[in-house]
Amino acid sequence: MTLNQKLFAIYNAYPRHICRGRALPAIEQALRKVGKEFPEEDPYKFLLGKVKEFAASDLGQSSMCPYCENWMAGEQWADDTKEWNYAD
Image (cartoon, rainbow, N blue to C red):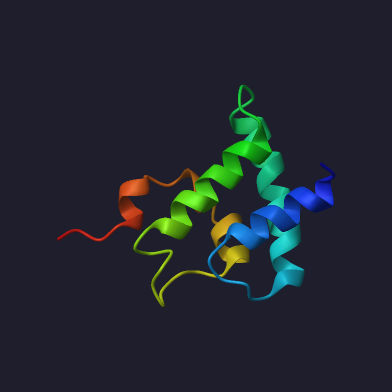
């Protein structure tokens, strides 16, 4: 799988598809950060897994879901996943 294919796979898994031109470079940067922070992980699989988990969360399904660019740049993939779901 090429880098471009990985970027689009992650982008397409994200719940909002807005500002693709800014999202794709942010995803690429996030892949680099994941590789540095978690050298034992495959950055693509790690980030894609986090995006899919976020997409299924309450926040990922809400109107408050951040743009992909902001989610990636803010390193929200490293957040406590409990923060993505609303408390009852």
